[in-house]
Each structure stands twice: as C-alpha cells, then as structure tokens.
Length: 355
Image (cartoon, rainbow, N blue to C red; front, side):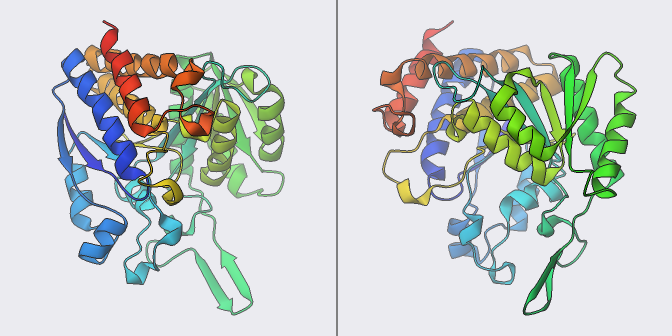
C-alpha cells in the first residue's frame, strides 16, 4: 500500500513525524508493506510554488491508496488569487472524499461530559454552508454592496443520500441507532431535503432506529446525555461544530481522530488545527493524527479485506489508550509532563510490547 504524506503547517511536521514513527512500528509488527511518498502543502508550498496546493499533489494522491494529511493554517493563507487554496476543501471536493468520519470515544480518565461517549459523527464534507465548495466557478459568498454580505448554502439529494447510507451501514454494525441532525424548522427546504433523503435510506435499514434531532437541541443533549447516541449524521456545518463539541466532551479535541473517506480513496486528517503558537516547541499532542492514521489503516483493511491492517488499527488504538490511562505519560494539554517526542516513544513502546 502506498500512502501520500503531507505534513502541512504549524505543528504538522512534528505530529506527522510522530505518526510516521507509530506507523513504522505497526508496519514491521503486522507486515503491512507500507510505502510512502512525501510532498509539500501549505506555507511551504506557497513559498516555493506560489500556491498552498499544486494540482500535481492532487494527481499524486489519486494514484495512492491513502493520504496522511497534516493540519493546515487556512485562516492565515492569502486570498485564493494569491495562492491561498483551502487544502481541506480541495481534497474533499476534487477527490470526492465526501464522508468526514469523526468518532468521539471517552478515553480512560479523560471524559468531561455526563457518562462515557462512544459515538461517531458522519459529516457530509463536499457542500453545505461552505462557500468554497458550492459553485462550479467562483465562490458561494459575495458582497453586492460594501455593507451587504450574502452566502449560499448548497444541499443536494445525492450528497445527502450517500452520507446517510454510510451512516446507516455503520450503525448496523454498532448499536443500531442513527440520529439525523437538522434545523428543518427554519431551513425548511434545504434541511427538509436532507431529512427526506435520510428517511428514504432508513427504509432499507429496518433494524436501525432513526431519531431526528434539531441541531441546537443536539448540542444540549450531547452535554447532558451524550452516552445514548451511536451514529450521528448531519450536513457539513452542523456536523463540523457538533463533532468538536463531542470530541471535547470525550476528552479533548487533541484526541479526536478523523478520516475523509470516499468510495475509492481515504485521507487521515487530525481534527484540530495547526497550532502555530507551539510549533517547534515539542509541546504538540500527536494523538489525533495517530488515531486518524489508525482509522485509515482500518478503512484500507476493510476495503481490501486485509485482516492485518484491521489488527494494526486496533493495536494502535489500544496502545494510545494504555499510554493515556497514566497521567504521567500524557502531554501538557492533558495535564501531563511529556513532550511530543517522549509521548510518541511511549506509544511506540506500548505498540511494540503487545503481540
């Protein structure tokens, strides 16, 4: 299997190095035969090539089996006409990585909510309120006058149907519950279309219970009784916000794994940002990208029927749990003493010791 590695901005190099160290141990222990290609994105690419994302990088990605995508500093990029391409949006739209899969599971001794969470948020990632992915040409956000800004929301039956189907397929092998999050009481047409497609998909999964929850109510319910939810499916903007909330309730956003999955390709990407304020200081928590890489291995194992890939993913997840269970082997953001390199060493040691 060939993976394209793109470290990104800020702490990207540090947490990518940490993740590569973990993958190296997994590669040897489980005989994964992983091969890696490396390239630059973000500010490093902007400085050398005048753009944060070259078309050649996307073309290379299409020829790989998976992608390891580091964090990006999109908010700090120059305008698009000066080379500031939104890398996450480009990967999701141009490679059709429509399912942003974001689990939130309470890690040992780290939960912040009521009860232990074990849920997965299925986020549609190619349309919605995000103006950089809603038009064939141009942007969905514009200003007719200096004092008036408008933004277009795009919702299609096709995108709603396929993210709903992935959510029900996942729920069927978990606890058989799907919560569809919406704001159809106000967004009558767009969220109404989303719910129409979810209900149609639900008919093909009679063994899975469907619950419909208004987005503001879901925010409160995640805090009060998040443990009762299994799989949550939502449009792009709603799921983006709720997944950060769920991750923080389950322990920390720094522990949140994530993949962007399509039908043919999958990219592992940390759920958090690039944290430039701590870049190069050995303070970054690499857990999110490590767990995202494990999710990528699991996706590859399921897609290609490779048991060793699924075993490797499970082993990485378990190694992270064992390290996080001890307050003495946590990173500073979790109240622990370990820097990035020391934490990585603890995880690789835990991974190598089992087996």
